[in-house]
Length: 79
Image (cartoon, rainbow, N blue to C red; front, side):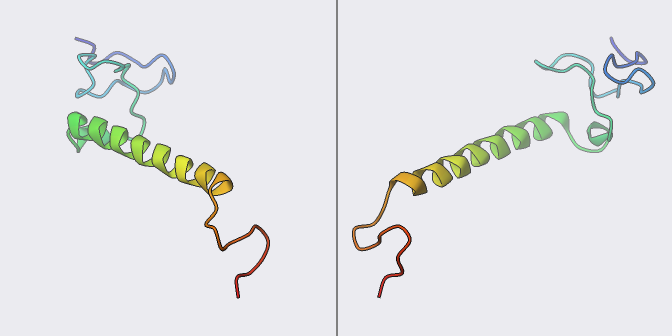
């Protein structure tokens, strides 16, 4: 296992015990220590969920530039 080893990005920090390298992309980087208190699988799912919500939000911002309702014109207040 990788317990007790330091992290390459921050050599003075110790690798948390929950981050043992079994998950894909797990390099042991958790400087705040969330994995000590919260299940790492739940944290992974939450990160995926938030990323997908952000992608939808950006799509909405871009769509507003190109989609206009028929009675509205850019720069004019409807009466």
